[in-house]
Length: 188
Image (cartoon, rainbow, N blue to C red; front, side, top):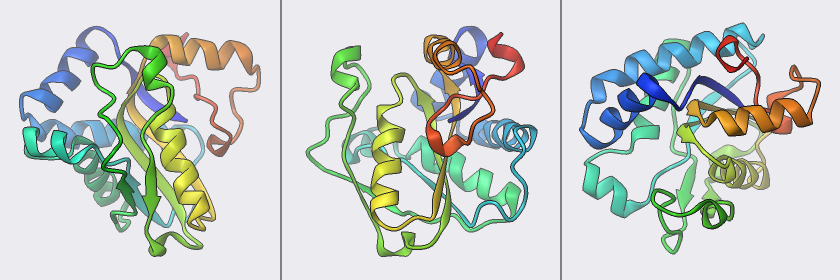
């Protein structure tokens, strides 16, 4: 997995403002951070065919008026010159992750992929990763739907997740498809 920033301090405050105070204009900046991180980690044009996102629950989308991961994904796709498509449906029985304790979040929501997934190299976007279960579940659904490859990316991740992944797997430059959080200069 690739993350642009740690979910602490100012970055956390800005992301929460984006998510809960309808500051959608920040999506362009978040997309730029993600695109820069992708290029810094060696991804090039042609490595990805399509951009999609891990959709939030219908209830959360209705409360906020938008899906924050979709807004960022569409901006990332625009900056990369790629199509952005809804390729996942969240199971309506899946509870929102926000507000759950860590143990409950580890189970993650369930997703179904669309038929358009088959044969695609997919860039999967989420806003914040705490346990990684949402992206793992979405990745699994895309692969079950026939995706050729999936690159998981998020605007931010908790420092504990970065630290755990980097200390348990010494080769931090492995493929994003293997689920490794790539260490950036901010995660030292």
